[in-house]
Length: 352
Ligand code: UDP
Image (cartoon, rainbow, N blue to C red):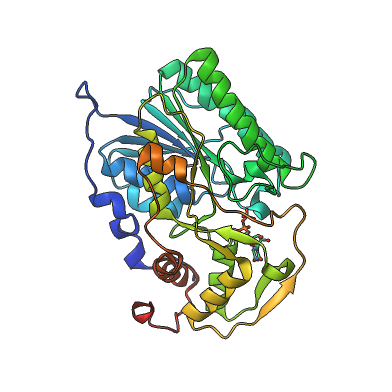
């Protein structure tokens, strides 16, 4: 039976639970946040951090890729509530100080299942979120993505790079959807004065990822633990930069709590760059797995290079990631082992 091990269902799955409290705003009132996509990988970490700050949290998710188990430990907190709803539908009434928009399937196999739906989540959903932002005077956080850079011709990617996206390819529903969502944010900001905070997220991993969602870190760890072949697409010379979730969430909160004049877009990601083949080798070594590596074709429009330039996040937010890849994997492998019911064959504590 697959399930989160007991050691990962409590507050320790959410390191922010013991963080500093920010109970009240300047007027002495408890702040209220709406988190769309709040039961997803990143959304659940955002909910946890908000609760640790003493905010009231309304988590909205249609559970298309989000999972209730991600927020179960949080639902015992009286400040937390859950609404099963879709951002493409009218959003539930409420008065919010801040809205965090993380609603969208994010892994290529998942967002390509219903590509029309993916585009509309980013356009209709974003419009609904921004309209609510106008109605409440709420600050709006938008989870944008490094995918807006497409298969980049500038490396590393700076925020000023405008990207190279194939508008008619299989990734366009997500890439162009997220680009349109950024456009809506900035037009609502200019036209209606909505406070916006747009972050461009680079590949991120850690606890609460769905082991089956098809992304490279989760696929490789799960297959290594199961002793199944690791499938490397296109020879594995393409690169990605992998950010540990705690670092990413810290970047989110620094941006969201920054001065209103800072709108973004701001890249948040780890600039350490690895080929996919290197990642496979590291995971095999760290898990002590004897799985073989097999080659599979490169999916259409798969970007060949990706690495964030994070100088803007450093300058504006004083942010840089702290958890290097091996350390982040050390923290993530036990989570995937618990999720899949597999044993880890190495003593992770002794690995450097
Ligand atoms: N990839 C792979 N094997 C897998 C899953 C992904 O080789 O089992 C590759 C994929 O082709 C891409 C990279 O790993 O080049 C990262 O893929 P992922 O789906 O995690 O995220 P992306 O950055 O492409 O959105």
